Image 1 (cartoon, helix red, strand yellow):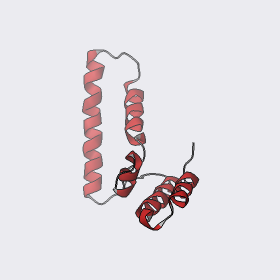
Image 2 (image 1 turned 30 degrees about the horizontal axis):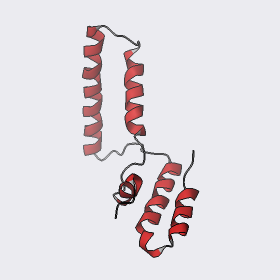
Image 3 (image 1 turned 60 degrees about the vertical axis):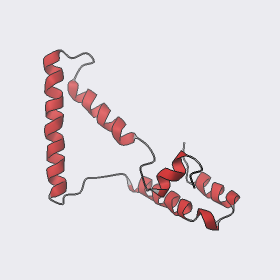
Image 4 (image 1 turned 120 degrees about the horizontal axis):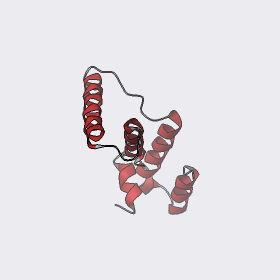
Length: 105
């Protein structure tokens, strides 16, 4: 039963935000070194990014884990997944109160 977008994401244990994409974009812009690079700088940056991604894939294949999220955010996500999985056994107000306790703005 999909009540809203985050319910399905929590049920599937998908990320709550797109921070990883935003982080990649910020690092890509920072590595470019300027706001409007010329064509040669622009061409070299995706090539460098590709080599970094290939290196990351090799590390993953070798069993070297990446850093991942902070413990605090992992705990938030795990608590939300637990609440979502227990949705059918809770009163709707208790469920919403539990979700509200795990939100931070």
